[in-house]
Image 1: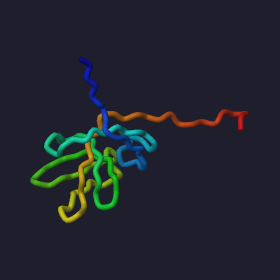
Image 2 (image 1 turned 30 degrees about the vertical axis):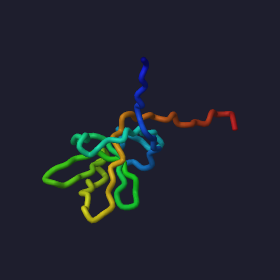
Image 3 (image 1 turned 135 degrees about the horizontal axis):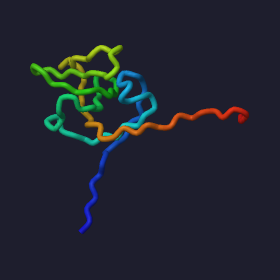
Length: 107
């Protein structure tokens, strides 16, 4: 018998620079739905927080959830329990999409 296991459940295209240099604008993140108990500190996750989809590193400390970007120009986010928060899953693969370049002499 042959069994197949899906690597990812969904994919997202990244907009923004908060995870640079690990993840860049236009990269594709493959995400596996994961229960909150399976997420470990430092995992890259996709969450809905407020009205935004965010890609961040996940940390749990002192009963709080803190979301960090790899780019130090962006402040950490301490999740407010009164805000809408939903963990969509853990990033299992990051695919860099080749950038288009114009070739000199061609239109």
